[in-house]
Length: 503
Image (cartoon, rainbow, N blue to C red):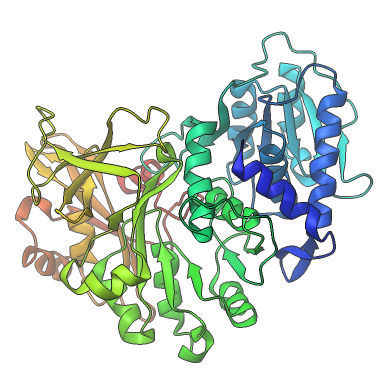
């Protein structure tokens, strides 16, 4: 039995006229989603090539209604969703389509007009499907209405999503998430609301989830499916911006809302009146480390806990995080933690050279074991440096694979970023290693200034950092920017940033 699939099907059948998704202020119904689930299922079956359960279907996954409906359709029909990120440049998307070789590509009409997309689908002999716009809600694209390719990878047994990583540290990879691990990750969240061991009956609920996280990212997909399986309405934000997020909070009065650390800084800087956020009892944040100073700023300004969490694409979501009860009880003594390991997840910290487990309190490489993983019985070594304590609270200390080796000295960018962001003129910073003929690699920093702040002279900033860092950690250059190149989850895109700082 697939709990998530059955709950989605059940929820869609309760009240076709009930609002399911709001986007740009317009409500779309559960009936409209159900029509697209049935329509896409019929179109795929009509191609006559056995494209039923476990068939690979590539979908342009922007934060739009049609993509949301396609996500529900893939879950409700047990097909494998292959993510295409529409935020990428046209040439990147076209090359990705050719490389992934899915038998069917699904997109809105506007995406089909992007240069190179139709040509890429035609080149591999795949079929094209249009969702939304004029005509039937789901229909084959004229001229791309047959599957003819001989080298297409038509099925992915046991795989629920071929998920793109965020591309923070390099070229995005496509990771297959097993249906069993995904079922455990999403299903356990939904079942947790019903109580231990209970399987909830499908029902509609009044709460509205505000969803700025991208549907091309595991955090967006996990939140969207958890809400729809629980019978909650989603308010989709295509790309995070403070006015739209604020308006959604004021209108829908949620108890919890989510935003990545970059968005939290933008909210603070906008100085939203406390009354506008009075319905909230907390904010959840992930995708990147949440600085303790940022958490304290929300407590001081709004008395709002920021509940950090920790997860990854490979985990099918989060494996650790703060609950509201834990935050109130323990945050003062466990500042900087990403929270406690979730039920069913085990963690340990090991020596990076020998792999030997380290005592509580020592820094090493984090390993995770959980039913959410593709191999639930063995430890998965992450690329994160971490500390754990005896109560299963977890601190992430940086990435083991992003260290800058400056003339033999190791510089962790996270330490430099934290020191930079302590300067009153700095709103956000990002640090990468750039090549150096003498030292091999040296740190360089991109900086976004706080509102109204002037850029401090390099000498002043260097002196400020020397009071907080060792000399080899101090960046050799600073560049002030309006914004960083970013991934779809708003993390700094380090390869593009490295190019920028190498100029």
